[in-house]
Image 1: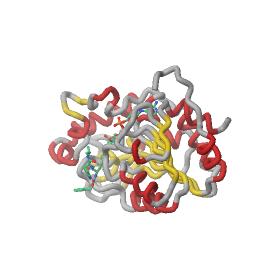
Image 2: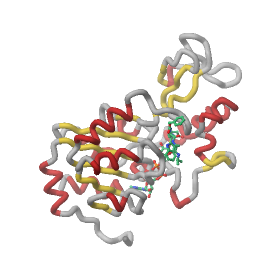
Image 3: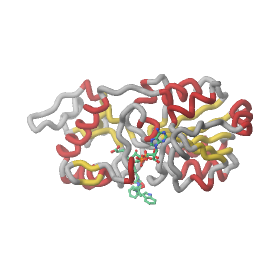
Image 4: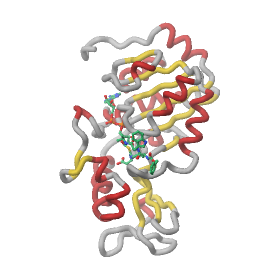
Length: 249
Ligand code: BV8
């Protein structure tokens, strides 16, 4: 689709949007792209940190080997996020939470921009970059409530052990119950949107497949096709910040 081609919402989708009761939305880095958050695979390249592909620096193995290096990577990303705010896509989805009888917003993003746009009860499949978790007592803290020790690694205010970013790294399990809650909603939703994800990371990318198999009308919003496009009922090839506000009109 060339950039200046006007995106339209089909009559079928408008009807289903108007009649839907149970709606599931899965988002990825693409929904934050228009806010200036770099995607992981934008332009086909994997994001890198000091020569390491992101799924290496963001891995359980790296955490074991070099906690300080992992903190430096997430401190850098948090620094970039401090100057960034939610965009039209985040704001539209925040509106949707009161529009439907049952609305579930599931995100792979750790940037917290959905919540800053007003979305509540967001299922954060991969954690949140603004929180830390204790490596030994697993207590969780908002980062502004923590202090680093001499090596720059944050200390648990409760037990004094080291804290780690409260994000899910590659090779780690998702937060208890998060995927299960999302999957239960996927099995019973009548409309499922997949917005701004390359659908390469599992088990997150499996959610729209569950929804489609359970009969949900499944719609992808992405300027590029993904491994999920063929199984969707509709693919809207456009930017989320331009497409989602069209549902209000
Ligand atoms: C696990 C937090 C169980 C950290 C992240 C099955 C098959 C193959 C591999 C696996 C499998 N099951 C498990 C694996 C391994 C692995 C995995 O999936 N690997 C991939 C690489 C193949 N999964 C795991 O390790 C998961 N854990 O399975 O645990 C287990 C445990 C122990 C032992 C055995 C099993 C944990 C995965 C979570 C990792 N953490 N994030 C951090 O942020 O650093 S993943 C991270 O990467 C994101 O959260 C997200 O999930 C992913 C990036 O994908 P996207 O968000 O989609 O972003 P991307 O840049 O790729 O794409 C952007 C898209 O937006 C593009 O399509 C683009 O076209 C589009 N776009 C751009 N602009 C716009 C737009 N769209 C709309 N509007 C725009 N304006």
